[in-house]
Amino acid sequence: MLLSRRAILGWGATALSAAGRPPIEIAEVRTYSHKQAVIVRVRAKDGATGWGECAFDHPSLMTAFVHDGFKRELIGQDAWDAERLWDRLFYANHDLGPGGALANALAGVDLALWDLKARLLDVPVYKLLGGAYRDRVRAYGSFGVGFGRRMNPEQAAAKARKFVSKGLTAVKVRIQIRENRQNPDPDPTFDFVNAVRGAVGPKVELLVDINNGYTVKRAIEVGKRLYEEFGVRYYEEPVSDQYHEASAEVARALPNTYVIAGEKEYTRWQLRSLIVHGNVDYLNPDIVKAGGFTEMKKIAAMAQAFEKQIICHNTRPTFSTAASLHFLASISNCGPFVEYPDPDEFPELMSVARVGYKLENGFLTVPQDAGIGVEVDEPALAGSSTVRD
Image (cartoon, rainbow, N blue to C red; front, side):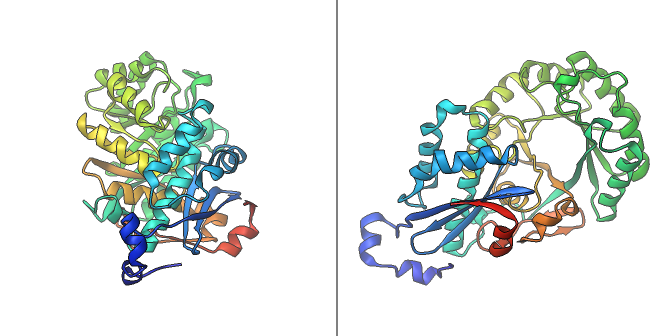
């Protein structure tokens, strides 16, 4: 339900004078556990609706958090109070683990509340976040190779070429080594990077994400070679996210390379530790993991105080991408990129949602529709999801 500005302002003198704005009482919270996303719908008593997205790791856990941990705290509350509700939900469930699934699930509710408010006011979310510094963000196409099991170098090269054919001028290869396969021998990294560089040519910016798989010494060796042989200047999570000092050692040893980390830090406190002890060049928190707009704005303000820019981590092409664009539009310390997953890998998800952003000349445009800028085909979503009220 969309209300005009005139309708809101004329809602009723009694409500406005008593509370300063018309209350929007939350009446329903619903999740759609889809094959390719966990979607949250918050509906107000008057029928106004907002949509959000949780992280996709362990969908059943995300929906349990929303329904067993959050719903009873939300029903009857005023949807305008997104920040107060964020604190209420976070601290009521704090003992369950503040820096992981809690923030991942809370993001879905938070995005839905901001979407609802912006729809009621008939403005894009970035207007409520402080306005826009920019109307587009340069994107890099991102794909993972599955540590050699899902994709070979030739397939990776084809994937990179596809992104470039769509106008992208930057591509990221996720090697996906992980800590439990630390310093693999043989190491697949150079085979993949060599194939991708050969496929896209020397002018395309190439980013490499190790996914935490190296010790400090090995990370430095690989980082130097990636820069010298392949011109790789952006080097993501080369070492474990559990040892921030290791990231600082790598960053110090690679003066020609930008070290990126932050996708596994989900709160302002975790990001503070990464900044202070890891001192990476760019932070890349993920809005559907790091608590939504409410927490990400706090992270951005803190990062600005330390002169750190943000590149949003992003692995889903609907709400996650659109929300990342609104957030990056609203902050002064936006980094050079936003991550862009290939929508063609999410056909079922894209078939139930229409996105308001566009890919133009290597940039993603910030959605200008009311709310986050994603319109859901609710019957189709319900028909392809496990729905929980």
